Amino acid sequence: MGPLIVIVVLVLLVLITLLAGVKSVPQGYEWTQERFGKYQRSLKPGLNLIIPYIDRIGRRVNMMEQVLDVPSQEVITQDNALITVDGVVFYQVLDSAKASYEVRNLEQATLNLTMTNIRTVMGGMSLDDLLSNRDSINARLLAVVDEATEPWGVKVTRIEVKDIRPPADLVASMGRQMKAEREKRANILDAEGFRQAAILKAEGEKQAEILNAEGRRQAAFLTAEAREREAAAEAEATRMVSEAIASGNAQAINYFIAQRYVDALKDIAVAPNQKTLILPIEATSILGSLQGIAEVAKEAFGGTKR
Image (cartoon, helix red, strand yellow):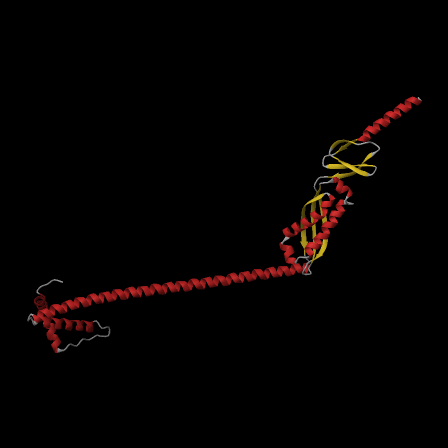
């Protein structure tokens, strides 16, 4: 029995030794191999062989991208506003050896580094800048934290500030300010509307005056043209009468005087306040001779049709 027991123990020892030398690393992880406590290499996903009893597994490092919640913390801004801020950090281990041996408690170190830089970056800005430049804040935090964690073999991919909460009294003041700003813009728009309406009204009146002046100018031109033609016609008639007188025809003078007399009577008759017309005796005699005016004109103008 003694040799059999020894053989069984030896077989078990060999099996245990073989199992101890074979390591299966899951996908998304890297394990560090240490020999007598010193880092040797990183075991990749899959089957790996190590020397039993000499080598051992040091750290099991998650190589996938991970998210880290940044708890709420109070920050005093540049203009002395006390706000509460929280956020998230996305990071990924690129070098398992550095992440294992360059820093103790990688997650806690990354979290503390992020919280410190949030206070530094946001504490140097005013409240208005914090509320309106969140993308800029995220970019500045990412640049600072990623540079600081690079010696640890870590790549910080994103930092997002989730919530920025000013105190209640400050929120109420901001609400009143926003309301006043909107009322101001509404008043400006009303004033601009009244100004545009006044301009359009003045422009319309200007155009109306121009059109009226243009109409009066056209009317004056046409009136002057009509008077010019009337004067030309009268000059032509006077010339013909003068030629008739020069040729010894005295009836032409009678025709000219009778025509003027009739025109004067016509003006008197159409006067708006003239209800009764009294004519001198000489006028009645001239009216009686109106029938002969046609004959006089015929004789004076030699029957010329105009």
